[in-house]
Image (cartoon, rainbow over all chains, first blue to last red; front, side, top):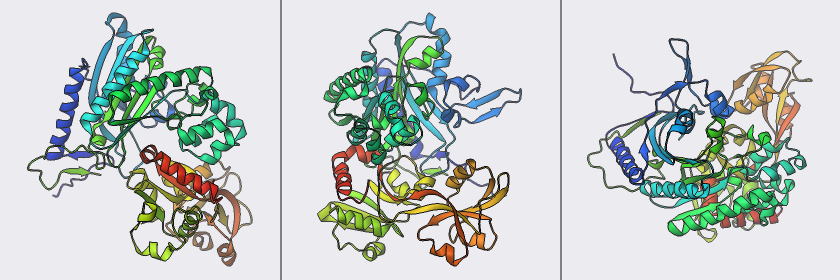
Length: 344
Length: 210
């Protein structure tokens, strides 16, 4: 009987040289994390489904692989490390010394429509920094962003862009202008802004058009006093970090994160990973500008779990870092057999 | 050099005309010339043009193989991905409509078969209607389905309505306007923002897109 080597949609087997390449990259990144004082946590692949009813948005829950265990428990396969880590740490934080510097690595599984380049199982490596509530969040943001960039530069070559914003940056503009567009609500307007639909943005407001065009409004006051102050803080952080990493292009672009909202009316429409409530960032790397990872501040995730701490973190997709178009030019891997990767 | 994905088929003419009106390519750049080649370098414009089928084009842009391109909003409704969609061209617009033998849409509560090349869009359309439909996915000649009773209705592009009239079909309801849209890769936008915004500005200034 002939046994097929076929695999389910969205998963890949790394064989021989490809496996070695990923492990080598992983080892490099782990050395950097450990050298920066971050300690590893190992989290399970299986978890109860029930906690994620409130921790995740509808879009994120839609990505979950759920099943009923033999004892009748509804379980999920791990789809995101951060909420799982928050859920496990929140009850224990009172007895732990802060700050906590943690990192994790492993597979996450998310259902995605079948499309070229979209995996359903991918390997992530990430870090989280938890500090006492009220401690300078700017310092923690700075530390997390610098670590993210150091890891990114360990993992890629060629051009690297990191786009920065903060959750809720456009809330006031979106809520104020949505009625003028005929789109049917601020959430739809946020989608149009995230897609940089200039016609819609122009119709909504001049400031939103400027955000779509240039990433920030000409007059930050248009964002409202709170968001304007946060934008100034983000610009200072960007300038500081950019001076240290001249090889990385750091850009503030509020349109890119138009969906990362704070206002409840907009929050409903947030897609995946809606727990961010402060700085948010993501990176593109390599000649093809592959999206390789991102992160942000997520204090509200812990607050919702009854543990008021300051939390910021990020993750990198190792499959993405090694993807064609993003891959670092590494030392030649010897003796790579003909079949390096089997993917469906 | 910016890699520009150009669509084969009905949108190519309006796209080339818009690019020429904005001064981004020469007037002489013809459909026939582009259609024959897979890649065309336009050194004076700093453009490498790729000729791609509509349904493949968003994938090339999403994956960063092309920095930007033009594709119909009908296709985007099916395979949108993580693309930026800054502009819609004015020329060459058509409409996505429900068509059938008529005279009316299915009665509330009824269940019909709906033939289309656009199953995802069809599902969204049906979800908002008082009638249900089994979606029959076809890859071409969709108008034939209601003519030959493969399906009661169809969701398809209508340009002039002549094909419908010739086949004794009627446009039951316009679902959306279809336009050729400029699509841009997210990373490319960050990398070439100034240049791409200049292109976009010239297309807007020429009055061919908004």
